[in-house]
Length: 211
Image (cartoon, rainbow, N blue to C red; front, side):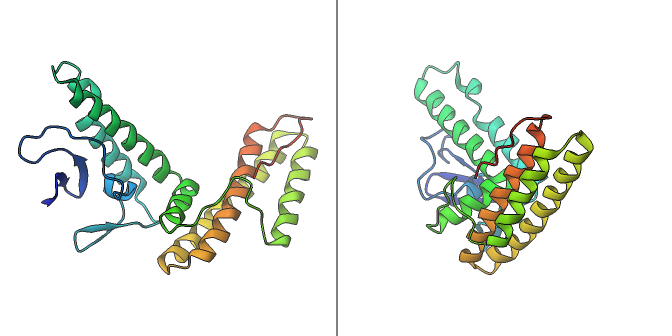
């Protein structure tokens, strides 16, 4: 299936920005094109891809690789017209950025909030005091851990928390409850940092929980 939209090619709902009449690579994607549209991810509603938190990661990667194959700069490096090469480089860079954002549950949540004019800073504070105390308690456990088995238990707990929050995020985004989605994304950010701290753990090393 091919759907025309100005000079944008849709092939099986995967987008590359090139002329339909001659296949020449054009400049980078328009500003109103989302990462979901670029990578053919999301809910297909009447031929339009709408952002969704629930993504098939395997299909996302296949779409990414297919797009990168189509616009890889090396394919245009021997052409006399360097503009096509430059455009291909720009598109390849944007496609890679889109993939890096959508493949990760935390950055995907932040991006979906951004699409709805809601931003989350790296230092966004938790409003849930009970959860904040839990995070501080986990940090203390990490600092007092004496072996990798202790740390593995904390890592497994953080993975469970992350998976539970992702399930709640899916429900929040599906119901367009962006206030709840923001709160959950902040929580997810904290538990991501806990998990990262378990990966970086060393005996006696001070535990830094960045948020």
